Length: 138
Image (cartoon, rainbow, N blue to C red; front, side, top):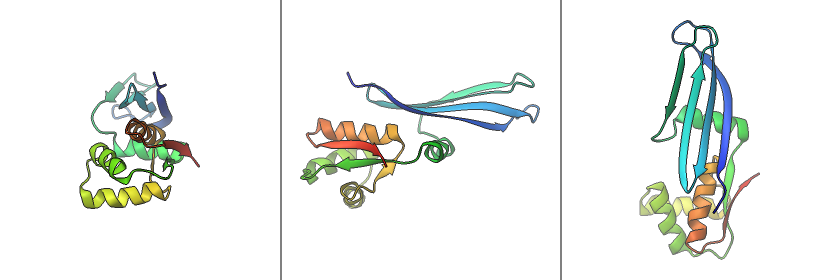
């Protein structure tokens, strides 16, 4: 069984109830082959608390994670089966044939990047298709 991969961030935001600083924690994780995220926020001044999760990773949380941890890169080690790689990338990224060719070019050049859980998820799917791939931080 492969290990879970996660990144987390602590940040502040304004409390919607009293205006004080919320203490916030955001996490993105790859758990049992599935990408997940959640945020928890609590106001120490008034007790306001909220938790959120599910669906697509919010852009703001993704940008915070990338700013804190840096970008992970997806590497495919040649020679990679381009047809197999394109099938995996199309299925996982939900892109068409034209777009997947550009993504594959980025991957082959070591330029396709994102959060570590995102890149590790793609690397695992590529490895399952027989393609030597890894998520790395540069």
